[in-house]
Image (cartoon, rainbow, N blue to C red; front, side, top):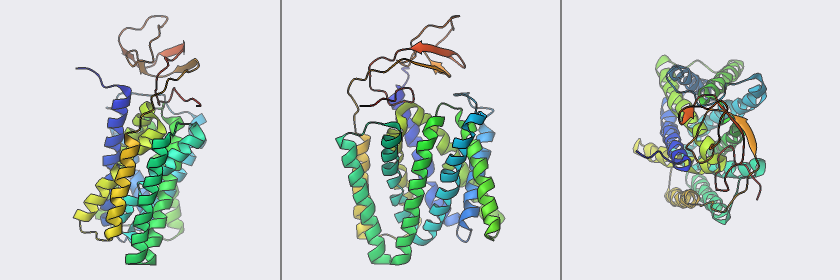
Length: 350
């Protein structure tokens, strides 16, 4: 059976990550009713860290180990992604409802694309720019519907969710530099830092401890939507870059919105439905973007687990290494072939 190309496997991983995250949004709204936003965030990332630690003995090593050098970046990642973003999401969900909130989560792709361009100079063509504009228009339609139909409280809730998407986009951008590190270690470290910070803040602000049932359910949501999903997201970023992973990940909120509607959330009117269609068009435009011009990359020297049949690591080793894959062999200095590859080894300026 022919192995999947890095682009195809990256897209598959990103879709799986999106689905794992998408289904949790309405479940968090249901299980977290009456639970404080910081306590909820702590439970979600406790689940993420626990799940990562549980599967690590059985997972194949696929990256470097964390070092002290990555600690400042990890703290920033946890601050945006495991403290600020989930707290804003939970606060917003309680006011705007799961259906509209899930749709607004699509705007994470917009923020991720913009930051990937600004920070990593990832290519944004006309089609992607159009997709970003269409997604923004869809988000505005949802917000307008909430303001006209349901009032100011719901609109403020959506603004909080929008803040969560911006925070997760910053998290995505910062995490890009950690994509070559063992994903399980990144998830566990991020989760642990997030739990410590959100628990401390929840105690300081006097949030009550949740009952055992909701606490367990929210922890399971965290294990799936924030632990498994993040691990898959990191593996996808390694193959297809931050911008493209973010665009594929934007399919997840539609799953969340559909599930929320089926579960009875009706905080959505005609404009929200129109906004959902518009968002879908924007995501489709982004997913079908093709980055096909020729690239010339400088020689790069790096040391990480890799395969010799991926079209990039086609170099000899001294001493020779048997087999297509090996866990910890240096790639030496090599020159990448001129081809479109948005992975972590092929950052270039146009």
